[in-house]
Length: 342
Image (tube, rainbow, N blue to C red):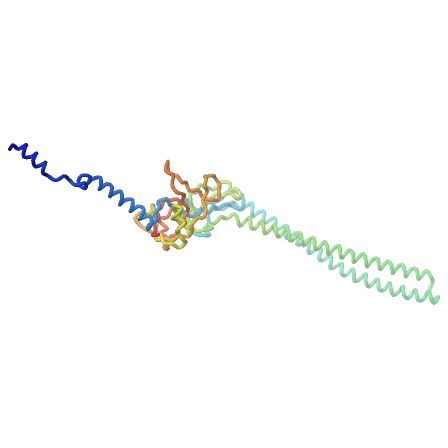
């Protein structure tokens, strides 16, 4: 028997390969897919994760309440400041001059009140004198009337006594009326003093507002203010990144966001401080998002699509880091990653 015939005979008698061996690569691929799908869906049922998160804090704008020329700038860009630290100063000279003017106006009006008060005091003395004169005239009238009835005084004497009584009555009434007029003048002068004092207080307040200070501790950000610039009232000229309001905003799919409660423990990875997991807890879950992107809206807009892939709606979950907060690794707007066990 030749070699070829021997090999053919062996091939005829050899058992056929099993289905597993024949489709081994296919089965391996299917197994890998099944394990991957199970791990993906099974893992998401246990662990929630998102890389759509970012660090956030408040940017506190500092706007002057008065307008004027900036005289000094006491900080530099990116400087750390404490609450109450000097930031800048507006030229106080015009406001100091206004305070001086208002002080002189108050003093002048107070002097007017003093004069009118003295005048009213003199009116009291005049009323007393007019009252005394009236009593004397009344006595003389009564005496003349009695004597005239007894025929001991002439009609002329009685008429003279009557005229003196009427004159004394008129003089007393005039003096009393003048006293009332002077009292009203005093009230009016005091009201003018109150107005002047209020204007002085406002001028002093405006003077105090020329000194701008940091309302919160934080960092000066993007400083472009320079001495000589004109500051408009109500327009922000310096921004402070608040160092006390750090938080992480994570966008989770709606089913995950709906299942997390405030206080839930989470772990945060900061891209600005890699290879460190920071413990935190959920502060709250946003209850609404905008369905369309429009400017100046109160609701946040979270894009539901990435390129051409449509994603499930996501809601904002606000996370607070547990103390001690890593101040050096926090930058508002920096990316972060968040995971927690469901």
